[in-house]
Image (cartoon, rainbow, N blue to C red; front, side, top):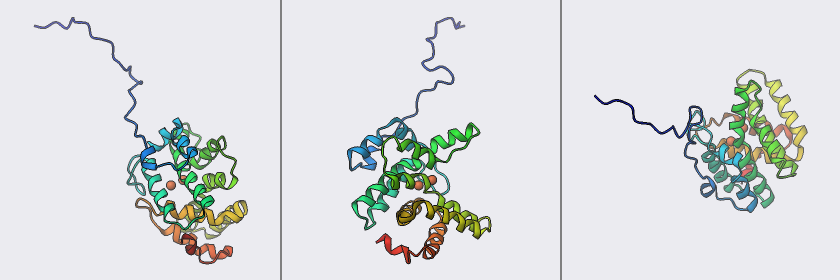
Amino acid sequence: MTAFTQEVPPPLFAVGNAPPLPVIDFVPLLKPETKFEENLLRQPEFIKGLNWGIPRFGHPEGKVGYHIREVLDNIDLLNADPATRQRLRIAAMAHDTFKYKESESTANGKRINHGLLARRYMERHTDDGPTLDLIELHDEIYFAWRHDALHGKPKEAIKRLDQLNDRVRADLKLHYLFFRCDTLTGDKIQAPRIWFEQKMAGYGIGDIRKLAG
Ligand SMILES: [Fe+2]
Ligand SMILES: [Fe+2]
């Protein structure tokens, strides 16, 4: 009979200190076009954020990094001027990347929207107001649509859109373009985008779909 007397080396990783899962380097997939974009994607917060997510409704691709690739592809389809394109790309890279932090804040009982978390982080790296507002307020259109379509409160929906318009004014078109590029991804429902396109006439923008070029 074998006695278990041989010494066993101590475990490499104590309980609660498991080895990190393989981390995907999203830089080759996301193809940064500037040093600023590349440096951003190499920050620890971005590496963690891009690797966050599992396949779910609206996001069969799972990880945030794959979703961003889809958004960037949609931005490429736009007929956007260089400044608009740069703002859209930076917002695409930053907005969803802080979902991991939102989920941490939820676990701590104080949920903070990922857009706001992303804005706070990005304020360290840029002072471009339209980009920061885009990063922070991107989900406002979706939240407004929910008031109307899911809760039967169209006045609340318009009030929320008015608040967004008051805050971003001349940049509402920029918000539409980003909303469009973000919504035409994964298996997201298109009802919020179509609803917003119809409401935009009320802000004197006319047929907003033509902006998509
Ligand atoms: Fe979002
Ligand atoms: Fe997104």
